[in-house]
Image (cartoon, rainbow, N blue to C red; front, side, top):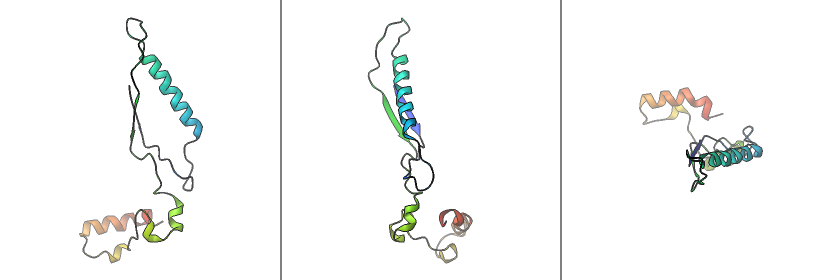
Length: 108
């Protein structure tokens, strides 16, 4: 049985609320119930599935949004020290425009 889950965004709690522990218990119970149901064959015979493979896609652990990064030395931030868009020399004009447009998002 293949289970795919994506974009949990587990944080350190400094940048908003993260998923409650109870949600993981509920997830485990639902997977167990689905595995049980999948073990019943069309001839009404019970044959347990061999395994459950869990694929974690997307942003599972999300520490980049932590407010603790702003407390650290700028060079240790995951995004590094980002110069102001007007001082970005050597970049194509289209890239400068994207950085200027999004600056409020990544410099907040």
